[in-house]
Length: 161
Image 1 (cartoon, one colour):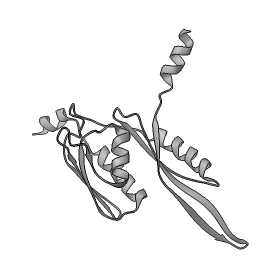
Image 2: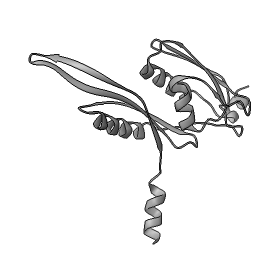
Image 3: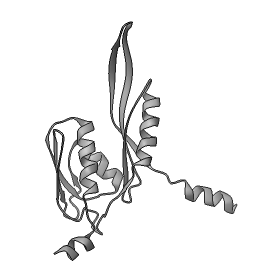
């Protein structure tokens, strides 16, 4: 029984959400070749999140590839005791501009699009965010990951002042 318990502990369950599915086309001599591109975010709702973008011959193949990529690219977030981020972050990635602000307790996630989905997967309960620039889900998701990587724990912020 103990071996079974250890295997269960090692395998962490992550929630996953498909952010977007797009059919992409490659034109070749014989006609068009269709593939599917998916963006998948996975998280444990306790401060870990990963993003994977992959292509495949069918949707299920693309999703499984994206999930395996996301598992390799996990980041840990410094979430405060109030369930929010420790400080404001502003990121520009390609055509996307994102502003993340700590939310006051009880307000919830005030954000739209992929920001809301990714914040829920990460376990952030209070957040105020704005997407400026493009409405491209892939670019906004990548900008969100960069913004989350820029977050510093409260101890580092107080030491630098």
